[in-house]
Length: 321
Image (cartoon, rainbow, N blue to C red; front, side, top):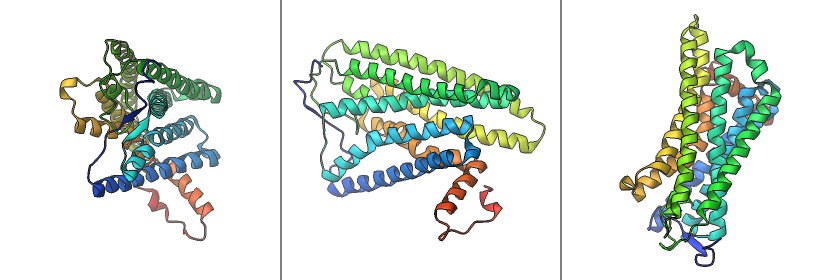
């Protein structure tokens, strides 16, 4: 790449200058990271173990947990290491790899959320065709398409970003390697090419977002026509968690990459980056499990099976939130 000889490393944003605050950030991120590992790992293990959960909805949820684990594992460990060892450096190749893998997981997750929206639309609005439209082969193909699209999108953006000549120093205003921050270091008009790619990706994401909005309008119209209150509650319980995840993910992600430079500031960029790269992977397992009785019961069965001597099976009311 054209600028690899001039820059051998980048300097990431430090969360604090005082040693006590650096250690506080380390322990805070360690707790978040362990919670994400535990929550997503438990969902993956439970869905793989319980054959009753081998349905399209849980298959996509398993893939979402895998993407969440990859996403948070790409950014937080390096940030924790920097806080623990009081350093900011990341090598040029490590920065490129971090950006590549992060963009793979974040892009694939967005496409997968779109597919999960389609799954809920078919399940509620066209239930008689659910088995035909979302058979096992179709689900595998859609999940594979999400992963492959994320990889191609990330490869294109990473190659375009790191082919730019950089002459504005090597300090990034973010705690991980992020495209907007690297573009700020460019010293030529070539960065307009990457901006064009970002706009194209944003248009594609906007198309997916419109699809989700239209789908949810149809879903809510169908749900409100359900005569029984119990049926409406069950339908909403499977849709609202997905809607919450999509809303947080899309709003913060689009703002991070397309916000005007005039409103950019280090503290705002940091907060937005945490909201779209750290919070969703940590909260998704709890968002999806809190309102899903079937998943909660399966998780509890797995825990009691693995640790029968420490746990006593609770009453059925434990699962009713």
